[in-house]
Length: 270
Image (cartoon, rainbow, N blue to C red; front, side, top):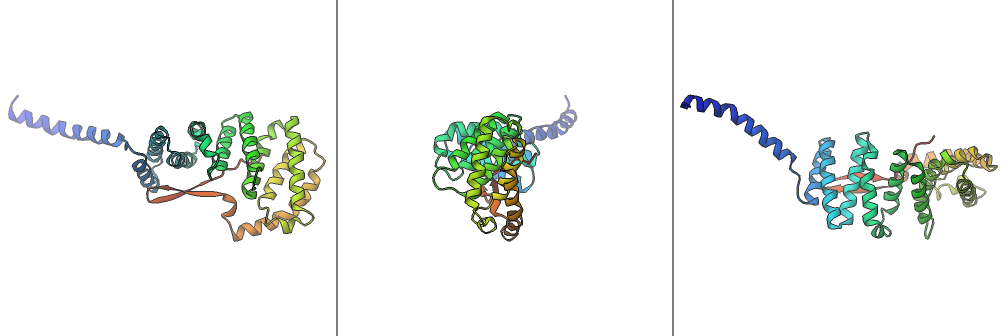
């Protein structure tokens, strides 16, 4: 081959080699969860959700293998929020299940324990597994009502369980729970629910969900609960206008230098 032919071949092959090199580098992921989460933050800012997903999935795998709860949780939160933004919330379900299976014991005393377990149950329900979702919601509701109750969290969990149980409202367990929970909430709101609602924020939506399932059960207390909601709804709306973040029940997670919020998710009303 002459010099001119060799030169021509080199000119043709060089862009191909560079292109291949670029593709190879683009596929390489960091070997630490710290760098993965930092780069996921950059992808988040750039709105490159596929890249953010790949990086948070990588961070989750590394942190899980090392048994690191908090970075695994941040990675899980990232996967959940990215999946929601992509309109595919349920694709984070396997990661939530793995996290709970591996960190369940440590999660029992963690501040995020209700959020993580609630969101896992929401994903189960949205994946067409209502019976599993109800079982998980019942566990987390029982946990939340033991000890000191955080009422906004607890009432959000109550709302989700009522909506998850809506499809099998006639079961004896569902009927007993609706009756007991509705009576509990009535008692705490007392004779002046408009006054008490400030301390029991979330009661309106919880009662609305109990009314929905209670009406399917022909529960005798639902008209009484509806009268309470008529009194509390406007008051809660006013409270929310002055403090719109209270009910979102969110925590801030860090992806490198940026922060994003991970919230307790809620089921849609039927």
